[in-house]
Image 1 (cartoon, helix red, strand yellow):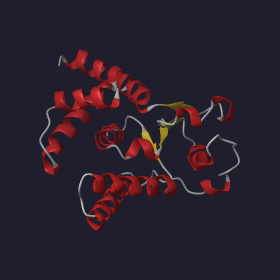
Image 2: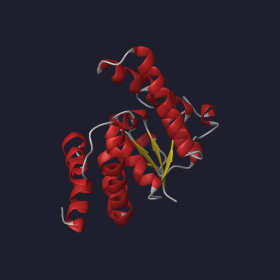
Image 3: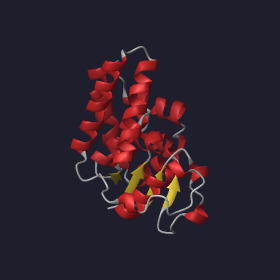
Length: 194
């Protein structure tokens, strides 16, 4: 199965994370991450919640529960042993070395990140492609349209539990507008006539 390392910058924006992980739950691909990625995600998620007005202690607890839930739902996603390669690639941002190390050790075919410039092609093994979340979503949705539609429906059905209920169209509109997933959304809209 195609596997992809999801960088922390891809995991803390809520709907983007939920959509990408919903695709994985539908077996469109296998998500991978390292302990370092999960730690960064937890810190960024808590900071986001504090910025939105939540008390720090509550935000940290909620972020911790999110990481535990992700780890439980995808219990084979954590890459072990990446530390031995960290610092060996010469990436422009040394703080991104752990992401590439986990991708190599985990056998990932892709790194999904917003920091494309920090992963220059000349320093990445040829078996790994570096993709933005929008590119990754487009590729995955186009190859797995029924699974992607099911992921969208499931997101819609779960949406009312923690916030306002959203229709599949609401979700797709947000994915397009906020996360620039134009191609992925268009593929779903055409097939499912939204």
